[in-house]
Each structure stands twice: as structure tokens, then as C-alpha cells.
Image 1 (cartoon, rainbow, N blue to C red):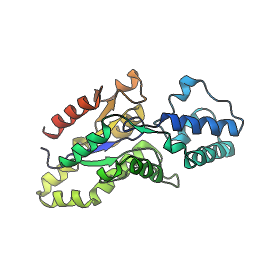
Image 2 (cartoon, rainbow, N blue to C red):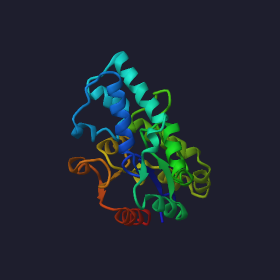
Image 3 (cartoon, one colour):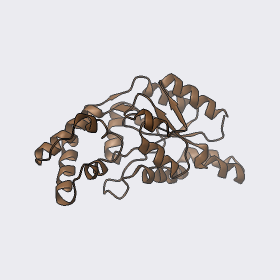
Length: 237
């Protein structure tokens, strides 16, 4: 096995089917402020990118965008976040990978509080070494920025430090090379964000991405079983 196998894992659309809750909060926020709700096909694209980016993409700006965003967050806080369920088999994969010595970090555009809350609710947070997520104050929103942050936090993780201490300097440097890691996600934002740091991306077919998006990834998988097979080949390469 690799000296230090590291996986960066998206949350919405990869670990969690959170679309029902995200959709409800999104529609509520728009209707509250008198904004026309986009067609359903457009709404289906909202999981993945930061909500702030989505609101900008549909033409909102300035104070109205701020108000809609605040209402969206409020609706999520009031219970919208609970309208989500783990994709079958993913919690078990996290447990398996952790037991095999694979280092796990999230890489999500959800805020730190939201990501930790939903993962804790479903018994997944305990399997992660690092929480890579958006900053509450909005200074870290893009997937690229989240991944960059996660890579820095991994260097400070105690388990990672222990492994690095056992390696010679050359191997230690290679172990933290982003090109030796994998990012697991479901949208083009995951591919593009990972590419900014040189991390190869795996897109899962059960998420919210399209065939066109998946064609941009280094790998695609159709099931958790297929994902694990890929991870095992990568970890033992």
C-alpha cells in the first residue's frame, strides 16, 4: 500500500443525497423575496457549487443576493439540512477505508458547521482526519480554495505527521504530493477544483453530475463497489 494514501471526499451528491433539503431551502428563499423560481432542470443543477455562486449565476446581485442567501441559510438552519440521507454503501466505505489506514478529508462547499453537523448526524464525521469545507465568513467558498485548505490541514494532522516522521525526506515529500491523492466527487466543480491543486478526480454516477461533466474526470464509477475497487487499485499501486 502507498505510504500515505489520502482521499479527499465531497459531501453533497457523493456521500449524501441532500438535494431534497437544498431544493426546498432554495425555492423558499427565492419565493420569500419575490424572485422567479428557475425551471426544474436548472434547479437540479444547484447541488455542488457554492449557493452564493448559484445565486449569482441566476442573475442575482447586490443586496437582493445577500438577502436570498441569508434566507436560504436560515431555512437550512431551521431544519432543511435534515432532509438528506446517505447514499447506500458510502458510510460503510468510509469505515472500511479508515480501518485500512487511508487518510480521509472532506472537500465540500458546505460551510464547516453545516458539513460537520450533517456528517455527525449520520455517523460519518468520526472517520475523517480533516474537515475541508467552506469558511463561515465567506472567505473560502470555491472548491479549489476548499481543497487547498484541506491540503494544508492534512500537514497538521497527527496521524499524517506520524507517518511522515517514519519516512525519509524524499518519500515524505512524495507522500504529500497532491498528484498522488484522489478526490471523489460528483460534479464538474470537483474536477476543476481538484485540478487547480493537481489532484486527480473520480466522479460518481449516483450524484448530480451529467455525462458531459463525468467525461472530464480522470475516473468515473457507477457504484460504491466499483469505487472501492478503484481505491484499492490506487492505494496498492
